[in-house]
Image (cartoon, rainbow, N blue to C red; front, side, top):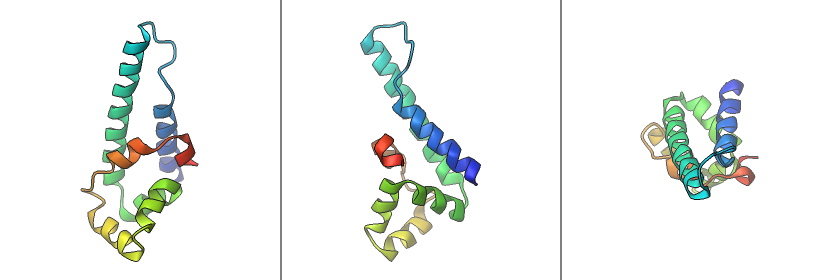
Amino acid sequence: MPRLICTLMACLWMVSIPAAGAQSSDDNGLAAAVKNAVLDSAQMEKDLQRLPWKQFRSVIEAVPKMKANVEAYGPAGWQFVQQHYATYGWKKSIDKLDNSGIM
């Protein structure tokens, strides 16, 4: 489980880094970075949805912004998430994360 959390955190960190050493123009490099970020966040969403509940909750609690979003609804928020986490669209929440939201 800690390995999974570290892997997810590394993926989030890599998404925040712009494409280094791009040979194309700035616009094309930016478009490629955005495309990679979208693909990475979609894959991260799928990976999160495949986790068992206890591991999923550990990952959400490790990311302060996501934890705050769930806890804003109190105990009902965690109940809703437990019932719907495998089908809920987490991609928007993942896309909103940046380096300050991870740690």
